[in-house]
Length: 126
Ligand SMILES: [Zn+2]
Image (cartoon, rainbow, N blue to C red; front, side, top):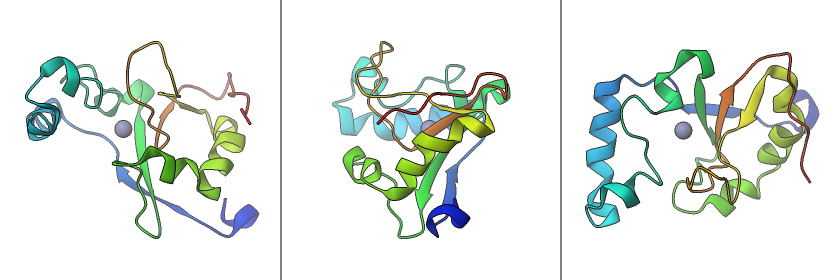
């Protein structure tokens, strides 16, 4: 990425234990009216997160200016770093887990990429 566009991404979140995932879930519940179902659109329950599943390890990225898209996914989506990911992450075995209108009823998370394998590179979307 740095060679191509002169930018780097940082890892904001990688592996999380089930205990930490539970902490996160409870932490975000007030923001979603204490609804488990609504909170679950944004935060996985312990045991269901790709952040706690090393076979498909998820990474949440943040750019060097501190943009992580948490409150506005469109901000992260607009970054040249995101464009680079959509074109090249598949070459490294990573896929965008939660694209827009995904069938898992999870919110769009342009910062969240997970490892699948080197055998099935993702095709880039425009
Ligand atoms: Zn994530």
